[in-house]
Length: 328
Ligand SMILES: [Zn+2]
Image (tube, protein in one colour):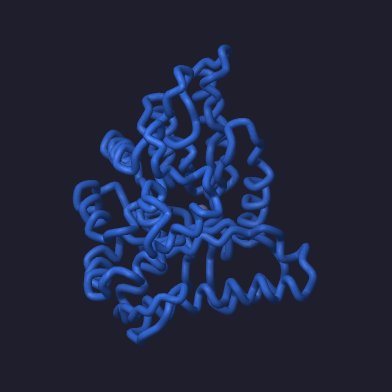
């Protein structure tokens, strides 16, 4: 069994299910709310149905509709009550976690025009409720540090900001800095010590595993997933990254973060073969890096695999996800 604890991919196409069976994979599918006013429930419904029909292959993580603070009729207590009721309905329908996405801190505004931060007191009853129901909060707060840097050099994330300039924060002092966002996320963790918090994408501290380790040492209720950050591990010194995994195998979750643009069952056979081949190639690259000690490339960068021992791999691939997401 291998648990991919950060996915956006669910379907009941037989070829796709056969691929999951071949690797004995289980996906945690994660909802995210892109816009406060856009309905994200179609995504939630698909993930929920797939998890109930194939519980050995899929689990799901819900989210909550964001507060519309710029609406003059907005009432915090009403929004909180509705969000909590919706979470309880999703928990009753199998959701094992709740996600807060990067638009909190970088996009959603308070009534006065300032940014709504992830440690804002308006979220406290929601976070406390997630903890009281023994669910987990998944946070994708901030972005890779390259988001705040000029589009020069060989940082592996620059291509994304070239293609998505709306998220590129370099030279935009009116937006919160990387440090401000990380501090707000850390405040959230410290403020809710009984809440399990998983930081997606190495907790947005992908540029240095020592920065991740410092948070793991400080906050016993914090873990991270590595989703979409294999390249960041591959370009740091091999011995340092290996030591990080040897020290914290119970605090690091395996995940890849593949986003499904179209359901495999709706594709032509050729499209489906291509999509499933890409999925397979992604796993093979991850397994080569973590399992084996050979020279290899990750996104065209030369690196060396970590050759982690079997007991460490078992924690990283399976047991840490089960511990941080009870019910997986
Ligand atoms: Zn994701």
